[in-house]
Image 1 (cartoon, helix red, strand yellow):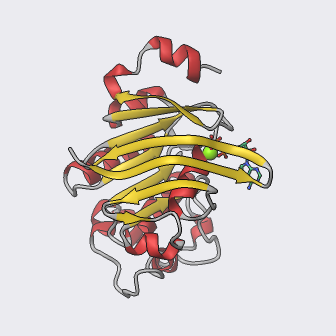
Image 2 (spheres, helix red, strand yellow):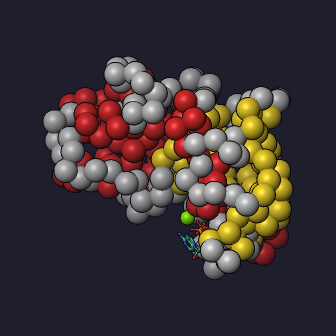
Length: 232
Ligand SMILES: Nc1ncnc2c1ncn2[C@@H]1O[C@H](COP(=O)(O)OP(=O)(O)O)[C@@H](O)[C@H]1O
Ligand SMILES: [Mg+2]
């Protein structure tokens, strides 16, 4: 499989604090890659750097044939990279429909794609409800729906199961698998839960202290790696 996204020599700083170190990673087209690692190792910073929400000081980010490291977040969305931030960032005062429409802003289109309501019928049923009135699981569905508004080819999700009830975690896993298998999306997601990563993921990447320390297909994620890099 060809690489859809290639990161090379990524170095990122918050002020003087060096957060990502010479980070290299290739995401294969059609894969579901689980980005793992303990709290504070730089997983969210890496995703934000891919999205153009944090600036990198050095390195290249290549999506298909496009070099993205200097382009704006809007340009990256236009190239069909969708993003679901950690903590979901739903607008609590806006309706479900209005929240979904914010996902269209960078695309110039006005119409929400049908796939959103096909995957999440609840978003149609509750379309006039305010974001703030939804449960955590429904807000996560809304956040994924909003990211699907641009019909992404690459979907990036930051801890989509954080703080969500187990039955909804399973549903979100099913949705991610469907997006990948039925709709052909490549997925990069941060995940802390091992059973979820093993069920949903095809590949893993482990980070420690801002570096990529292990990658492989998901069945290579063994106890030694888990003890060394993931146990708290
Ligand atoms: N906006 C910020 N300003 C300064 N430091 C930050 C900022 N965001 C994150 N950090 C720091 O960068 C490091 C990596 O954070 P983060 O990428 O959120 O880690 P993870 O997602 O793996 O838990 C942490 O030490 C964190 O405190
Ligand atoms: Mg994080």
